[in-house]
Image (tube, rainbow, N blue to C red):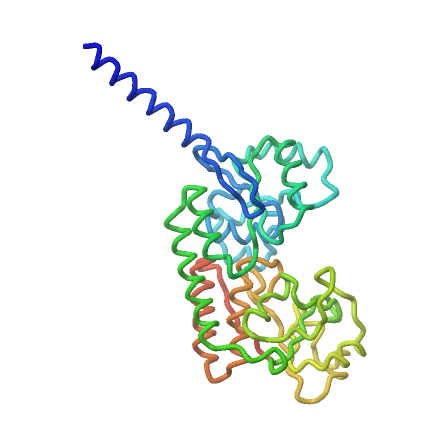
Length: 331
């Protein structure tokens, strides 16, 4: 009898220990921070626009809001359930007010996710917001080659392992297709210029996460690398950079008669990023950039363009469902 009682006691203790472990699962994020997660994650709060995309692809039904809500055109393609997602304050902003923090508390999120670059400033911000909101906050590396691992780990952490595996597999296949095309030596790569702005003069620097799709595909970004992702340029500056391919986020920058079109030499090709629900080169710089890498690879390897564009259209549907509208980069 005593032995049975002791065995029963040990079983109960083991069960309690297991329950405690589930309730306080430890997640090591990309910054090396050890964050205790709740036993069930039912409400996800994105810290910035890149996390909007990541979480919409992974678990849209768990989102409590979007840092950058849908525009009217995109809303029409979404189910009513997701059209209603409200805007939420951007946690990565340095201008968060006490009112913003109170709004965020009222959302009663179970987990905050930030996706993108990792540096000491973002680590300090994550620690501060986590302490203020009393909600676990994880930092996830946004490098595109890390995406399959990120999707699997985050999928497990939020209780969506199958979806994480599905997305990871699709992304891994896309990366393998790009790698299989081969990459020319740095001095032989096709020169690209990518920019934001209505005039196309907010240039994106080489080596930044914003222009990662071009470099991943094997293109050469003609804007020199330096601190910061963007640099203001003049038309004369762009002419001196001698790009052969120009991609812009705003169609106005390359419309007939625009300064870029009239100043760059004949033979320069111009493209507009028209992806939906997100841009494919970036904007915001998240998983959508893998679509851009495939589209850029199609420009670099025209003999394989159909394969790259077909893979991108398929991946867009896996990521974003029927609301995805993949358009390859066209003149």
